[in-house]
Image (cartoon, rainbow, N blue to C red):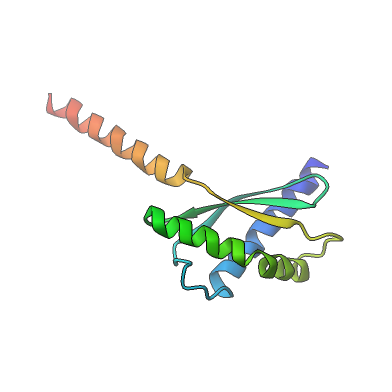
Amino acid sequence: MVDRINRISEEVRREVSNIIQNEIKDPRLPKMVSITSVNVTKDLKYAKIHISVFGSDEEKKNALSALKSAAGFIRREVGQRVQLRYTPEMHFELDDSIEHGIYISKLINQAVKNDENK
């Protein structure tokens, strides 16, 4: 059962990513939007989609509102592409883990440079 949910989550992630990159023409949506993960509930009614947006806080907020307004379209497209009895309702959330990782990496590099200079 867990493997099936994971496979469905991965398939939904792949299709949502394709839809966002190729089909949504919203000007609020920047080019650098990536789907970091998708969690589909066991009953397949909901999908929590974590997105990462490279840009300012304003761009992140705009991208999130654009995706929330396009959620019905994305759900319909996923329903046509993935053969499921029930297409999950899409909920989008910002994921700052990539930016946090870059920040931590910078801190580590600075610490290493400081140690080498001593």
